[in-house]
Length: 273
Image 1 (tube, rainbow, N blue to C red):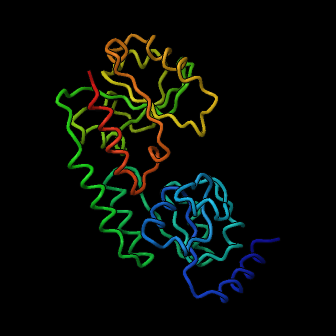
Image 2 (cartoon, rainbow, N blue to C red):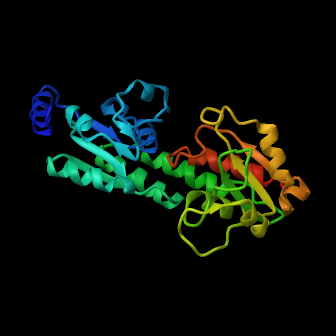
Image 3 (cartoon, helix red, strand yellow):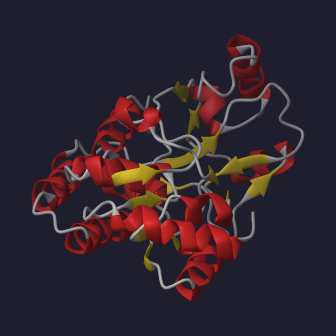
């Protein structure tokens, strides 16, 4: 079926419904829309949109980095909301006269501004509390009484010889580190995603290492062996026993649930010895 045919059929579907038909291109946006109490207007979302449970029942239009244009058009959306990395897809959809909204969800301030922007676009008045919850979490978390350098690692692996991804600069994880009264162990000026090998990790020498682990996607990892690998590296964190694992399904998601992530990560930093 050609895209033109799909688009014509979409208009017939659209006539049958006067409600807004929203498609979310990322799990974060899906969560925000449900939190704004407009989940009933969602007609599809991306892979890994698992929260709230109702999101799992929605059709999937592909991965959040490679959504399927024909699938989106076949669902006759009146609004498609994506992130900055969805720029190309959103541009194509605008050629079909479909309304789009692009949001940035990189820092904590980005998240708060995007919640307000989405709320205005979908006519929700529920954004104030979500934003206030994030602000409260940032302001009220317990600051460490021993400021130190923290390295946040994405994913738990047993082999640390190459490709260890960590939190760099201008991202909400760094915001959380700072809000807890600490510093990011990664000090290089590069704005690219930091990818380290074990020699780089030793050179950075973090005081504390927090590893973000997802049992759902990393179920085959032997947690004990992975921890042993980290403790073999000669760092301040390993010498003082300041290596921990956080396994929360929301920890990587830049949505309103960042308020929970702030509490959990600041709690881990408060355990620094």
